[in-house]
Image 1 (tube, rainbow, N blue to C red):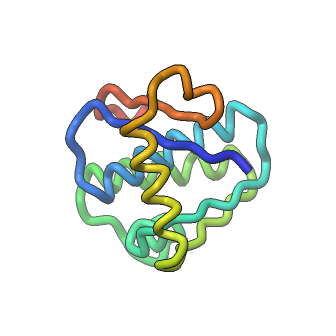
Image 2 (cartoon, rainbow, N blue to C red):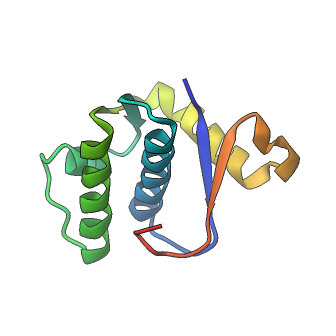
Length: 121
């Protein structure tokens, strides 16, 4: 299991920030050559958008979802599961960790930094 946190260098909506974190994780997964991935997601809306059950309406969210789905196809088997309330505390802890960690600790938990809003990076 790889735990990863992402810090953003720009302001984003909650759902868009979650998609950026997902894209970062999917890129890392692809780079590591992992062919099976289970994504534990705390946003029912975004999880259902990724699974194709809901349609994204905002242009930016549509672009994020399309990019995520493209990366998912490149990886192989990716299962997106919505986590329950009890598991959200752990996800929140990783988010807080990304904000608080010093750079020398980044060797133990993967922490990515997204400096701009681009989808392709």
